[in-house]
Length: 147
Ligand code: DHK
Image (cartoon, rainbow, N blue to C red; front, top):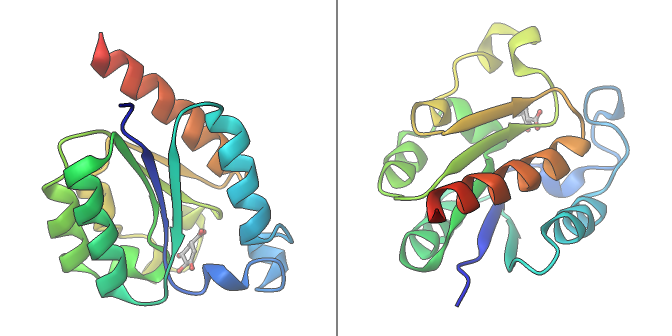
């Protein structure tokens, strides 16, 4: 059975579409989910969003048990959550960290990512299209690992 890719989204991303469109654009999270599913093709994909840190950690634990890769936009938790980093460190497969905006060009509080310490790769500043790029990159990482 092909192990699913987990696409995990953090706080406030459920407001995409109307949230600070000058930074995050106008694509909704539902549209982003559809983009990810199209990009994954036949590869199974689980797509989740939560404003609660513990739920994100629970999905990472699920992925540890049955996932093939994790794509994570932990949003504000990226810079604050040791608990999410600790959970990611237990994941044996590839991890792609994703941000819609270019966090390295934003205020200093958005520049020190804890998630990056566990990430295989990081995608920033491509807007909602970054999710499509992340799924494509993840399929390559998974196939490379399978060889
Ligand atoms: C989303 C957020 O909610 C912010 O807290 C991050 C990230 C940036 C994004 O660009 O997708 O800093």
